[in-house]
Amino acid sequence: MATVSEMQRNEIKENTKQGIEIAKKKGVYQARPTRGAVSDEKLLEKYKNVVKDIKKGNATGQILKTNFIIYDKDFLALNDDQKKRFKGKTISRNTFKKIKALL
Image (tube, rainbow, N blue to C red; front, side):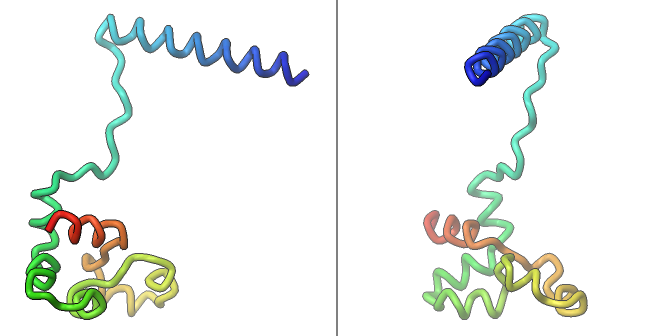
């Protein structure tokens, strides 16, 4: 049974690949748009307060306390009134690391 299922799955993959190639030749195929892809310049512009504080040499914790709150489980644990205080001022840990790496 497992072998037959694997063969069917491989056949589906191959047919899908062929269908995409045909659609590309016809000019009909549209790939899924990339999600959240932001250029480095736009990222630095969006978080210019963080960039300024990093250049000053402020500690990471101090930067985040004054400007933003890390969007993680701690943020999700806040009640609605507390979350409203930080509306538009959330940043992920990965974004913060990327900004530091760019500088």
